[in-house]
Image (tube, rainbow, N blue to C red; front, side, top):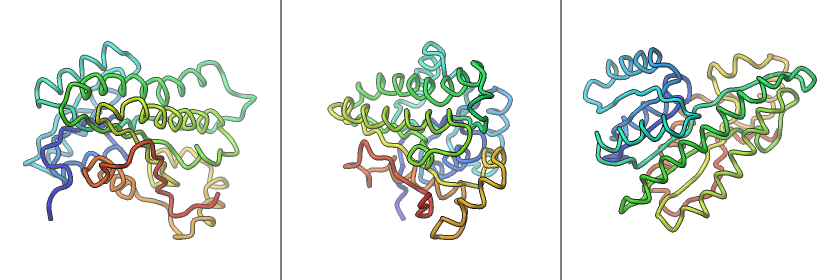
Amino acid sequence: MDQLLKGKVAIVTGGTRGIGYAIVKKYIQEGATVVLCGSRESTAQEALAKVKAEFPAAVVDALAPDLTSIESVNKAFAYVKEKFGSVDVVANNAGISQNIPLEKYTEEDIDKIIAVNIKAVFVCSQAAANIMKEQENGGVIINTSSMVSKNGQPSGCAYPASKFAVNGFTKSLARELGKYKIRVNAVAPGITRTDMLAVLPDAMIQPLIKNIPLGRVGEPEDIANAFAFLASDMASFITGDILSVDGGSVV
């Protein structure tokens, strides 16, 4: 079977664990050169060593830019462009979750989730677009949204609010960048078996699982498959879409 991403160069933020790490592995399996980004140099290098051990022939690198800094991200993306020749795919996956009642939110809590879940997506998309505009084949930007961007959640309201923002950003950027052959989509995972799931109380999770027609939580690989499809030429006429990968959840 032909590899979906053969010859592509991809950057994956939040690529050291969970869904992000699954995306890194899937992109490698599909033939891409991959640069994973972590929040710290140590975790990025640990993930790099792990993925190299699993895929010895892979062309892969790791960086730890400050995703909220235009200067830091521009420098990182320019490094990728210079080293590998292009930036074809950017998966904006870095994010944090919260489960804080409204009355207990602090300014620090609000600022943190806005910085990681919204500003970082903006900054990385800007850096990507500046490079992709100059490329003959444009490129692909894929953002991580969430099922709660459509339905909300009963606590931690800043998290779904941040993902609503990602959806609006995705749809708007798709319209703005289409003329440059740049596609912009988002993947909205449902309940997925990751570290972020662990911060939610069981009382919140169990009722949601009961409303998943496929009867299970998602695996990181389920989400990575969607990222691979949207990054590939098979999705060449798809842009501005928020792809739900949630087992048909009706909540």
